[in-house]
Length: 356
Image 1 (cartoon, helix red, strand yellow):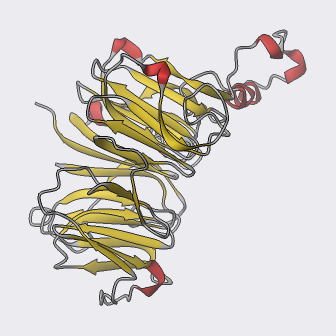
Image 2 (cartoon, rainbow, N blue to C red):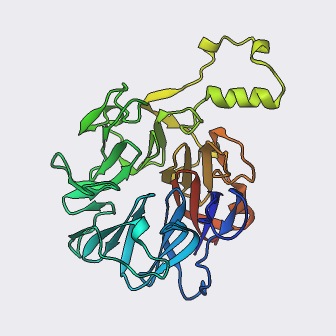
Image 3 (cartoon, rainbow, N blue to C red):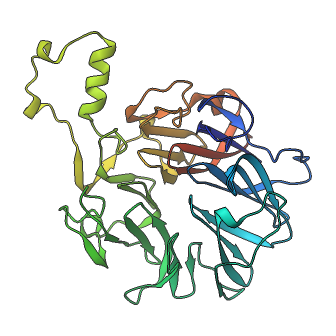
């Protein structure tokens, strides 16, 4: 299996090379390491660096780390299981505990200071990180919060200002800021207690994702639902911004358009979940949201992306934005089957294996 990365790399978080844009997927490898001996299990991009968990329990950080650019920081022997990363904090899940460091305290030689926060966890806890125990971990103090209401949680996704939770029986609950409709309750109000997304009642879900200000889910049947902010087409719905960009490319002015702007069908905010169709009636298995882009993996191992593409985070070999799901042809051309996708901010990471 091999990870590929594309998108913003201004600080070196996507590997070697100059410039800030990596429009085409490139393999991600631990610098100076034999890929046959150490494999990346998990990628967690922050704004100016990326964190990688390897199969031997080590953690590697690439990019602007510890106050120094282009570092490749090796933190071995942590028995690392998973990681959350932000510009200020990095939180590491180990077999029996969770520990947090301020990124500025990390030394280039890999020496770890005492964690600024830690908590014990049960080694037998089957929850998917950042779920731990009876709560979840956030990338800001106080770091751990108990779930506000009794609920059997299966997965949780953290947006910039909101949270999306998948219950064990396939229901979706959301809470947090709602000013862009990212909670899916049909309005733009804030909600500070978990509330079931009633518009999805009766539809069992298996995956959830939260972007900057939008949300997405995949049903047991492989259908994709998106809601929230659509300024860059990240919901896969018609975006006025994308229409204006297309007019500029065609050298057509807004005054030349006969279409009434009020009747154009553009969607800026979608406060109810909307069903998004993939081409060829493909069924989705995985979903992930970046700041303003979205990516989905199909059951047949293809990758579709849409939304803001200014830094090549859509993987189509250009920096165009899209308001409709579009297949990333790179992987099928290389005869690679996509297994998983992780989006954050302006980056996308994809896990692949050779197609059978």
